[in-house]
Length: 381
Ligand code: SAH
Image (cartoon, rainbow, N blue to C red; front, side, top):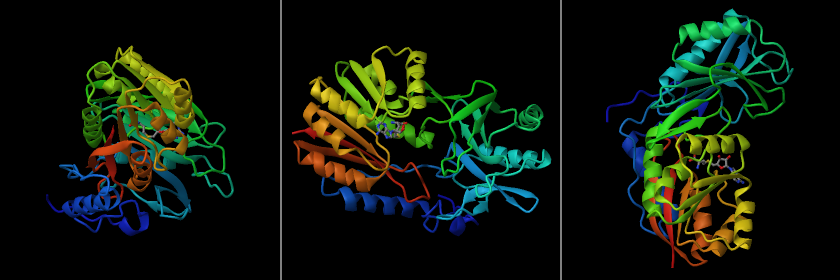
């Protein structure tokens, strides 16, 4: 692979911990990390890397700050609240980065001030851009404090005039003193308020708050691996736990008898229901609940479950969840994890309870960062 130019913000930003390594070395580093943590369970297949590991992030956000009269936008310096100005980033979508620069320049000319969370004064807090890789649709979310949006219509028109590729603009209002980017209220300023994206032959709606994998190329590979590991023949009852917008369950639905998806975020569940309909899938149901509570209830009702797919956040699965998986006794568990440390902990538990690891496939979803994703197949012994 050709040499990649070092990022000038590498040290201050802290987002790309592995910038000092060329891509092949990054892959070897991640492989070794997975082998160290999971090698005792099974042989680890070779990590699947990217052909072109730059500009893969389809969700980009920037914080606004004020330096004198000048509006700045960028990322928080690692473990501080200081903004490092960033106009382009080697892992972020290039169109999204250009839109963010335009938003900042326009905001400056419209005399919008950055929000200051010490004084709780000012207007613009963050901008978030999500772009559909296949659909090309672009959503811009302007996160602001409350009150009137000065010259809102002219601002929106000016932004659309400069970036006709934008398909929807949403204002999100965050009035709290919080490190969370998005507040409770959203208001659609232009378009539908969401974008659609295609993955593995299915269409998905993505709304501002719902989780969506940030690297579409590798997500396809990850999902195809999960489908392959599940080994479905059209008859099985499947659980898609921590299902987000329902992507994995919907992709598997053609090959399953029935699917139940469970997810805590109500916006994501709404998207999931919409997505099932949109794709004409009628053997899937979504539940808005804590995955642990949901599984406990299924186990109490002694439901028949053949395959459990689980894709938890970095903290891994709760003990309740794992105990109930064991009680439900599915033939297969496919565990997708973005944190091999909690994955190792959870595999340790489940392999003591009558399951053995049959496959481990790392996938590089986050080049240049230290993060590594794994898909693991567990079978009942
Ligand atoms: N499988 C999805 C989402 C994975 S991310 C995809 O591939 O897109 C993890 C998801 O778990 C997020 O959508 C998050 O909202 C959800 N989540 C976090 N804690 C949860 C809990 N306790 N119960 C159910 N879902 C939870």
